[in-house]
Length: 330
Image 1: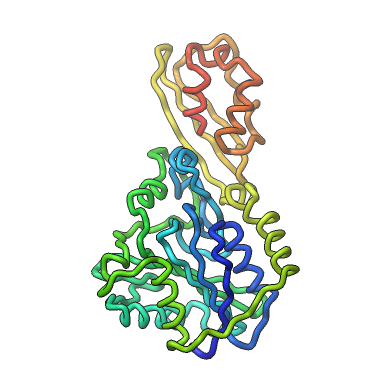
Image 2: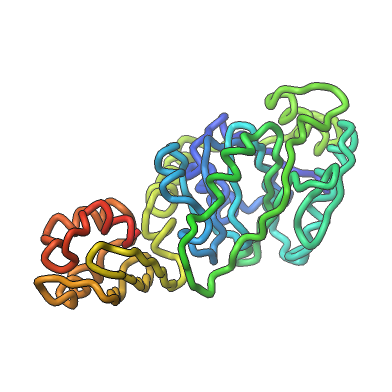
């Protein structure tokens, strides 16, 4: 890598704010030198730009665990971040290296080697060590500039990672880009000498600058205000994180005392577009009234639950309780 400039994220762990910082540097800080950004996020699933969020996560688990779900600008698959995962981003004014992941992963692999971890680039954009994945990478470009960013599993909670990125067993059909699951491991287990996350981050930073003091770009208070605004306008928005998902459909079924019940839901821009209810169940009212009640509702548990309070589902579906109906709808 040529001479770079490092931007300190002030130890922020809010994934929305860190993604907003990265976007701000891409769009508004056009330096001659590439910019290096390092950051650690609190537990979060970061979904690729073109993915269907519902296909990538277990929504019940991430909600129960308080895990953020945020969509990023770049494509690729969903990844899990926590305080044991270090993220790196190279931001440049030269797009000629777009799709050339080796250009950006190479320096990271070199530093890992200096720390005693024999790593290599596999496929197009993944870094492997000891036969397992330790890093996934993605890129994004706009207006003559680009960034290439990636994860480094240092000491992540791999059990939580697997549960968060494990969609519930429901039938989902869409044309979205789906993640490819790989066996993963933590870098900390492979180090020649033990390091804390802070020490690992410092070692990576110094290594990327060839053990010279990093030159830095200091963000002004006014710039930080703009970064917070980007976070509020994009990364904190349900319409971006969930609503931007490609159109998809969900199918579920249940056997009731009164008969079988099947539901097919199509979701467009994060909202229920159509609902089909079929089966040999019996009810006192035409089920078509139910199917007309939910379209337009945001496809998330709270919004659907609120909408269901406006009606008496027992009139249409007999003994099926509201909680059971909610499980079929979401």
